[in-house]
Image 1 (cartoon, one colour):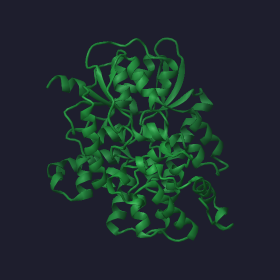
Image 2: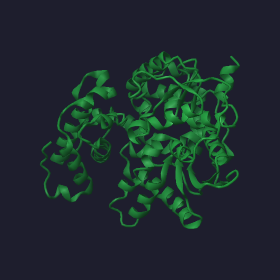
Image 3: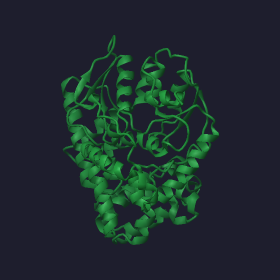
Length: 433
């Protein structure tokens, strides 16, 4: 694609990067075949190729974002299926991130939209505030179905029963069992610690059982993805810096072999820290090292090798490959291989490349599209005829929960149970029905 940026525009590092991405696009349109929103609307502007044209026109013109640009970029899930499909290697993720930042700086949203986005940016990355908000939202949950759009979507997020905060999410060290093979830091996360603290508990049991010392470093919090995808650069970078600083102290102290992330959306973000700080002389080196050390839990387990697995319980597993796993981190075959090696029979989910509609805060900001994609995904999961669904991302699990009479658990919970850990609560509840 030909571009026409001025020399003054190319003094901006983000514009330089975006120009390279735009030039790689050859207009082929292969990306539209796997874009969830294009499949729903058939509108060229709701597909990657159309969005690329909108972004190019906006950035080249040096104009404030229009309502049309904001609408169609907001509708993008950042599922990154287009990047997997693209034969030219167009790095759409960095391009749409730049567009969102430009929109946040230049577009005046309606008051209600601004209020909701600001609320999400404040609540979701802060577990204490988020927990308090969910307790209040539970009171309104019985009326959620009658509430309009976004308000109903926010209310439905509140679980019927809120689990207690887990002690494992406090700063501490969990020693390895037997010979120590690795020393890793675990990103506890933000939303996950409130909604499903059992995931971190299972992750720590699983790692320590396999000879891995696990550190929950003081000062680590939200990875920054939630605000980053809202186009809010300053809070996203502030979150990233806090994490980088905390993990760097561990590296300089007793060292780290890896930084384990068990929420794939967060993993995609942490692995991109090097790019985010590429122009920052003070942080570039540390950020690149942290990104290099970042691993999904399945990557670490693959390096070590799973212990012999048990053979009782449900065997037929439908693995839902979260977009941030298969498209963002290019980890699709690995989790399946681990699940199979633990003795489970994998049941393929039709249209497994399509997003479920969760996409961070997308299910709240775009409840119509998210609801349609959820319905489509649940129908495909049902066709797999499995006994349990497994996924590596908290957002997908929460978004799909309750849609089927099928237990839905995290990959770490399944593998923890398979190698000697307790049976996940969702499986116990299903067995008791």
